[in-house]
Amino acid sequence: MIYETNTDNLLRKRELFDDYIAILAKYDSEISTLSEDEIDGWFSRYFEDHEYWIDIKSDDKVVGFLIVGERDGDCHPDTDYTISQVYVEKAYQNSGLASKCVLDFLSDHSGKYALDILHGNEDGRYFWNSIFKLLEIEPYSLREVRENAGPVDLIGFDC
Image (cartoon, rainbow, N blue to C red):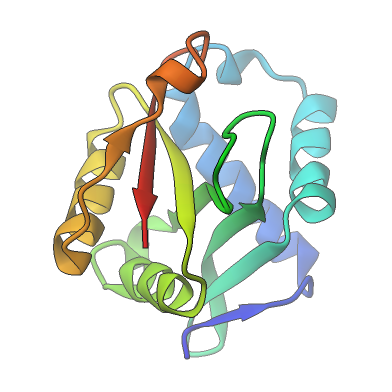
């Protein structure tokens, strides 16, 4: 199994998280204005508010993460899980590690899912479309659930 849930190696996780934030800032200018304290708070909330922080590893080295929360009624009512973030550092992109991690997680946790894809994030859109195609899932829009969602596409799917 490629994924595991733990909170070891916080410095490495923070390093990966900071890399991920830098990528997100390309698609959402508000992210680039966050202070270090705000980013610290965001990082900390992922450990406190999400049931799963899953390390994506290659040869025992943490190279990415999958962050998933359960039953996020405020943002995504009527879902069982919210996929908050998926990231693999550049050297491991297109290796299949992120896809394998997501597919393993989905096979172990059936239910209704929600995820947000930032406008302009074509790599993210391609990634998720490939997951949907592999699983023969038809995603649906959750835009009507949260009209003021900002620069994201709100996507739901059942697995």
